[in-house]
Amino acid sequence: MTALFCCVKGLSVRYEQEAALSSIDLDLIEGERLAIIGESGSGKSTFARALAGLLPVQARIEGNIIWPALGHAPLPGRDFGFIFQDPGTSLNPVLTIGEQVAEGARRHLGLGWRQAYARAEELLERVSLQQPTNIMRAFPHQLSGGQRQRVAIAAAIAARPALLIADEATSALDVVVQAEIVGLLDSLVREEGMTLLFITHDIALASGFVDRVAVFHGGALLEAGPVRSVLSSPADSYTAALIASHRDLSTPPLIAEVVS
Image 1 (cartoon, rainbow, N blue to C red):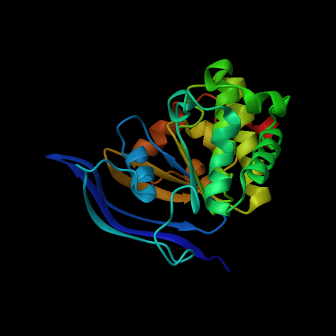
Image 2: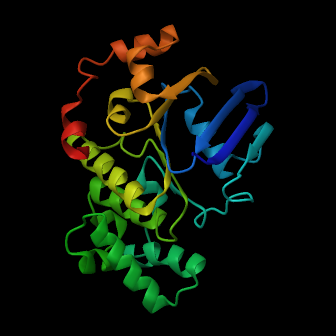
Image 3: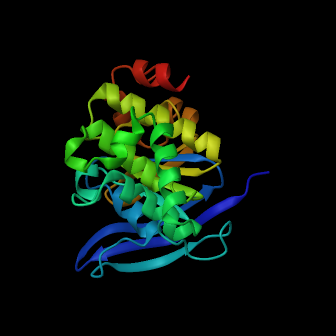
């Protein structure tokens, strides 16, 4: 039996006269991997930030977000981890990698700095960063884009969150590194039993490892369902056009190779 992790009812977000989201109804099942698909401006990142409580103060929000699995509004860093599109801006340039990854474990798990640093080094190794001891002492500008994104993933899961939100976390990377990061997210979510919300404009990228997809366009939810059903029989013409725009959607070679 599946358990309801998050229930979104009638969620609307406006900025002055502009509607960013319009009456979204969408459930998130505990332990599932849900992809929010849509082009730039579709409202998918607004949806993710609304769930995380990260919308700017000028946003006008209507509707309800209920968390049956948690029993309370989620605490950033503790109940959910958020991976942003550009780790170059989400990581603090004046703190070492070790300090940044250890902070979440220290704050939310009640660990001392020695224990938190040990967990940070363990996590850097777990996200497949070579020479994690050296990485711990490095600063973000000394790492490649792919390395920084792996660090961001390690920091996001440092406090063992129940929900991991990846907001266009691969879009700034080349296709090989994209496939590696997707494979890493897939394995971490499975091993930790986390629920994953994967935000992307690339339906082919998501199709290789998510359970369900929800298609956003113009701030509206067009359709949602099991990934295979949506890909084989899209209910909306926009989804059909999105699928048709990918030459080899049925078997994305890089994703299939990494995730299988």
